[in-house]
Length: 500
Ligand SMILES: *Cc1c(COP(=O)(O)O)cnc(C)c1O
Image (cartoon, rainbow, N blue to C red; front, side, top):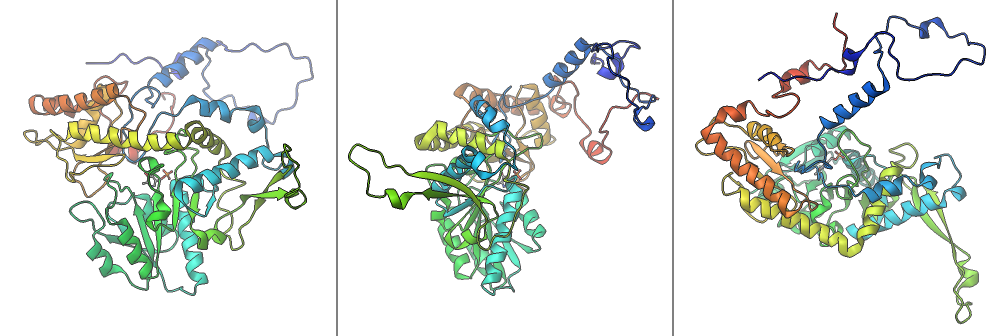
């Protein structure tokens, strides 16, 4: 069936049509350099309504979490409460400038300090730096901290980082960027780190182990404390990939599991929008011995006049203690990893979210994220093979392979889901599951939307048997149907060009 494609704005152009009316010139015309006055640019000549319709039409071709469920595993595409946006747009925040002196931006610094403290309370770490711009950036930062610490200990021969095969793909990439070698550690049949394989690879060349926990299978490592103990015993440090803290909030603190360094993803766990390229925020938390190495500046609190006032307050009178927030560089800091103070707008959103929910709410987030994922898993595993069949945390991974439908692949299933109005799950990751479909519903989905997703998955499994062509050609209800993804990656067309 041919689709009637609405014209693009460039094709709507009509000579002489204008979208804005400027007043008569009441100053002498300026001399504009000739190279700025090109007459050969084929700019569209369009009216205001053409422009508005163009952009609204484009926005309706887009899919986002404000439109429907977005179960993209590992990415935590939960709904982002609008109150976060209101807070981030408060004039006092919007109109501050990074070069303003500390005494003019005490409110901003207080927010950053409180966010550092809240992240410390959530994770059990002794120090937090808000500088890194995203999760992978936090990983690189954390590894540089580990390197600086071990070098200070004289352990300069250590050059290898162990990474389980169920880790997120950014882990080996960050390791390589920091100049270290990667050794992959196998998973056992329950999806945990294989302890025997780990032991065989521990020696005095090991910088540490990077553990995504829960891992990309959505499984909490049942031997995490033993893994930490073994790595520490070999003189290494434990890096925790905390991008997916969604399942742990208020239940377990990574520092209690033996993790020494960890990054958070404010743009996942703490509900700040992501996708489309950022900005994100990947704060790094560390145990006491690593605090001096944190990137700076970090925010410190100084209590002014505490001594004069201490103990002198009269009955019924509040103690007059003033605080001042300062930017400080930790003593042995690895330096700056970001211009200015990190992505402040993202920090405001995460702060608002944490304050709105409070400690109780944080725990509810984790409980609901876990129960939603297990509910879906129980419904879907009846039809889709589940390689690691045990309770999951925030996500789970099934095989996109069906009995009686040998020619249908995970990609076909994902594309067909689009026709049911759902964003596909993560495909073909982790690599240890063939035809992987990695599903993370998040806690913000209702029972109805979970059921809609499960029903769609089950119907697609039926269609795969009775009408596989329908899946091979899906999606059918979108502005463009099945794309040539390899061609798009190899020969991208990144802008519209007028017809020759
Ligand atoms: C998303 C994610 C990352 C990377 O975070 P970015 O902000 O995309 O760089 C790292 N690890 C895990 C487990 C993730 O889910």
